Amino acid sequence: MKLSIRYKVIIGYVLICIFSLGLLNIVLSKYMKANNRKIISNELMALRQDTQDYAEQLYNGLVDSFMSQENFWDTLRFSLGRYYNDYLIIYDANYAKKSEFNPEIDEDRLLGKSMDNSKENISSYDINYLGDRVIVDFPVKIKVNSKDIGVVRYFIDYTNLIMMEKRVSAIALYFSLVLGVMIVILSVINSNNIVKSILKFKEFVGKIGEDNFDGSLEVASQDEIGQLANNINIMKQRITNQTEEIRKDKEQIENISNYRKHFYENITHELKTPLTTIIGYTELAMHEKT
Image (tube, rainbow, N blue to C red):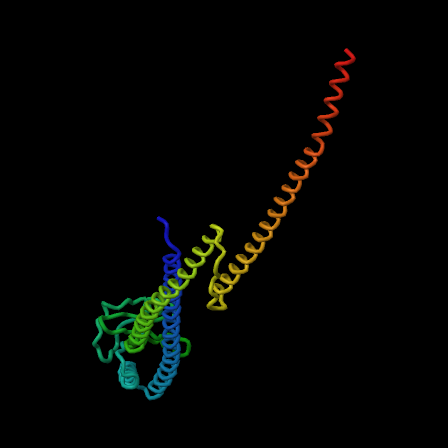
């Protein structure tokens, strides 16, 4: 199937538009996701350090006051839960659950990879999408005097942050669609202007091919289309000049040819009579001799 230049230009604009806007959305989405992960990571690192410092101070204080370890877990749960206002679970060094605060999350729906990593002394977190909520599961291993005494497992609600990321991505996608439609409309208008100019060039060059050198192309702009029109006018003028020179040379050659013809005719006429006389006398002499 042969496509006209109009459709080729439109298809080219559309492909460039799709590629550019698609790439823009991908880059924006990746940037926002990386930025949000950085925000979460920085907050969790600060939370881990604060939890470790507070737990170590509390543990040493309870030991000095001869309070039981059960009181330590309850005090730690109450203080951290009230301060951070998040759901948390506290485990001892053997990962036995000791206390929990604000129990409103189903643990069976969580990924649980971060807890497995904490057992290997690897600090990590999981992002869990629970319906319309986004919960970060972040276990913090507590060490006192280089000894593991337990784990504080935080469940922090980052729904607003992640939803903001999705809203911005949706707005960017909507903006890209609107911009894409505008680009397509402009490409159609621009392609029509280009095609009209090309059709004029085609018609004008066709007339030159038929030896019709009347008129010239209008140079309406100084862009590539205008430069092309100007070059075609220059080409037409040169062809016209060369054609005129060829016509003059042809007339001159025809004049020379006619002059030579007349010259030979005159010479032939002038020589015809004497030659006839000579031939006659020659024949008479030969006849008398015989």
